[in-house]
Image 1: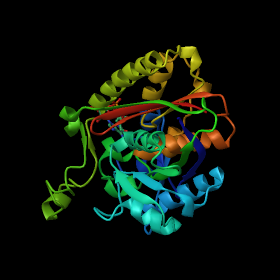
Image 2: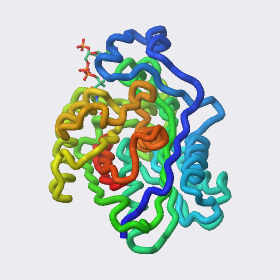
Image 3: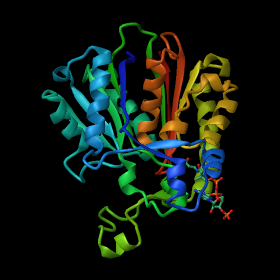
Length: 326
Ligand code: UT7
């Protein structure tokens, strides 16, 4: 039994933060940001918006696309590293907002790979027959955890949410073909928000040192991302007995256009077969893959019969992929 993606949805906050805006905030340039990352602008949530608000909007559009009522949902999973609260879960708040009264709900944290992890978990519930209608959302309001005086990170990240609805596939071939998850906790310090958890609660010192914001050894993470994503491509092809030319579309995590291009080269895939949103969204962590997927589906680029590879890499360090026969 395969899990079928019955509908996709996404939501982006209205406010746009451009590279030109950032030039006025830190020592950077549009030339540096675009040439090193491919990012031109990113979205920033309104002061009264939190992750559950973005998630709810993305969920509504995915449910509408799937033709499924919120009241019929069995499970809601929200992948996020920027939850509304430590607890209750963001998924629980989405369940309330949607009036999805029948649905169980929980959050999942696997940083930028969160959506791939959440999709994999949802897929297991469908495969075992435990649940039949599952909402998988990834939502981030990263702008609340960024130091806008740190040029190493503030130019990279943005806010947004994406969602999919999973149901059992009626056509045996269509749906999630395989999923692949990895973590290497020995590299957890490379990408981290040190304060705000039980190890270092937010206090005056943490705030003064901005330890509640994202810290990243960017160039080290970059090198490992290219290496691990290349290995992952090999694994997905081998496990499924496929060749590079069998993949029709790549929907990558949108962290850096140079990383995306390296993965596309590995797949021998021309860039018109790669879904790129990093220029307009920046890095929205877990939300980046479902945001890009929704854009590609709604614009008619991805169609039934296409073999689509979703992949992501991020804090943990985590990485993973899902192959979907659309
Ligand atoms: O989503 C989770 C996974 N994250 C990623 O995959 C991100 C991976 N890393 C990257 O995308 C890249 O490493 C970055 C875009 C973060 C940085 O690009 P880089 O080519 O690796 O640059 P770098 O960190 O090696 O820095 C090169 C120079 C440094 O100056 P010096 O030491 O050579 O004088 C930085 O201080 O660029 C400087 N720099 C900047 N200059 C202008 C760093 N940030 C900026 C900036 N504007 N915003």
